Image 1: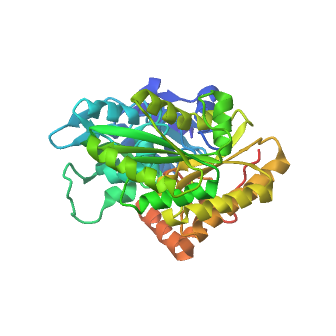
Image 2 (image 1 turned 60 degrees about the vertical axis):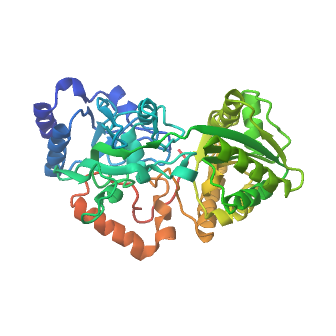
Image 3 (image 1 turned 30 degrees about the vertical axis):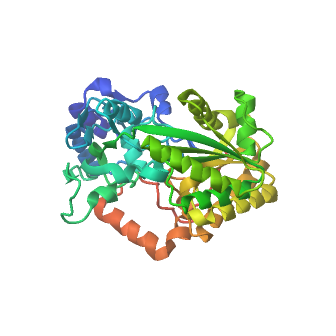
Length: 466
């Protein structure tokens, strides 16, 4: 390692290299589980530095972990094998909007919300809006293929990436795609790299597609006495020809937690509320709101409230944003999942989650992007309670089984990382998982880039206990 450090110091300014225990500990965890100490942290600021470091890492066979702001919920940036963390968060100097081309070109450390804010100056919008947008970097969003509430109508991160600059694990600098909307030259490496969780290359620049900002929006809240019935209502709306910009659900536990955390006047007796936002032309919005009201009237005892102004609409969405900080007041540990099912199976998944909650006697809270089937079953627990955590581990495995059996997937937007790796074969099958391993082997023959992610090691199981 000392020889490697000498080489690193010869190519990287000393004020970008961190080796003290306190500094390394700051990079040992993310927003998921587990703590792993790297041997060195380097704040990289250009592609040449990354290229040189990866060539060194290949020579000395040292693991390398790219990292943004560490908001990953699946363990994506954790340095599970020790080695070198590359902090990309300080590389935020490039954010250019090209309004005539409807694209943005950004460096990896730019905060995701900043892209949308800059686009709005030109009457444009960058649609992907993960809840962490104000703190997460676009590089991390690209690696994890993040989503957000607007994913229902506008899709997720991969749908807006048309070009990348990437440093390969062997230190080569390549470009994929470009600024054109159409590009069918050869294999689509852009799509392969987005969502590869930092295992195939390090993204150093991205060209992102923008869309015109809708001229108007309107928000509605629907209150349900039955959680499963809310799932049936979601399916009715989605098959009616109306496509909301957002359709989010909060179950009763979420509602009560938010009211205890910051009272907003939410209906705590309800078993679920749906928040729906329509956007587009004002006349079209009015017409579609009326149609949705008619759909809700088909369900007994559903109460509907349309926000009269932007302030009221923002108070509804504030309730949704407060769910995560509110539920951690109940117990100190939050296991946040994002199992996703086909839209027609949303009621079945709600029923399965009810059964799992009762079977394992756990505090299971359900909220999320119900309109696209991307539910967030969150288990509130205490990781110091071993007996409880064993029940939580079994419940998480059963949640994934339920999602896959319903035709769904392990992840809609959080990625696989370390936490879901043990379940990959459950969804992909042995042959499907092997094909992914073969792709990784070709790109990264020495397995230096973000090892320990996506692919399970032999006998690996989900362990949430300390």
